[in-house]
Image (tube, rainbow, N blue to C red; front, side, top):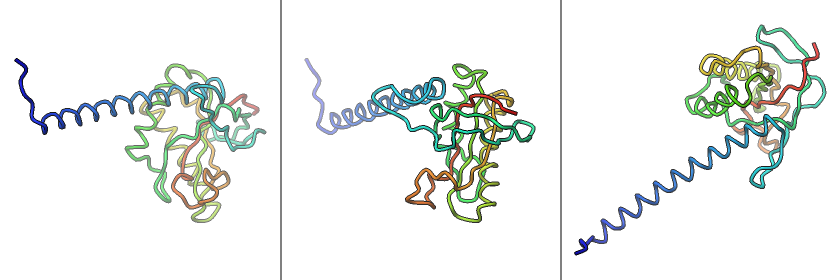
Length: 195
């Protein structure tokens, strides 16, 4: 004999199964995204599930950046090997929030494995609020916050991470210059050290 189930129990079980399915699907989608981001940093933009990432908005010529000892160094970057990370900051802040640290987990894992030993630029950005000079310094502090987290939490070799601050010069959303998504850190592969 099959036990009878009332309508409420049936609907509750169906909703619970649906929520569990959505959570599994969301987790799978996140891991695919992490794999794609890692591949873009390793191999360059393109391919993968019919999606194409945009390259970095940074210039392709030599950039002056800071090394681990905060010394100026000239580097050549590969703008096709970049990811604009979802590491956002509060207005006028370089403090990493808990959700930002969670978003950095994929990068920490990738730098320990598939990207081990490669050099990357952490490029800080701001929105247009405030003076240009202040924003350039703030964006550099944001890049340093990300580097310090990757070194301290994930044990990444600090000699592989360079930092630079570009202030509001490369907005993610130029149509909304004060939008939160402009306050971010981008990671770009370094092709060579020009010194």
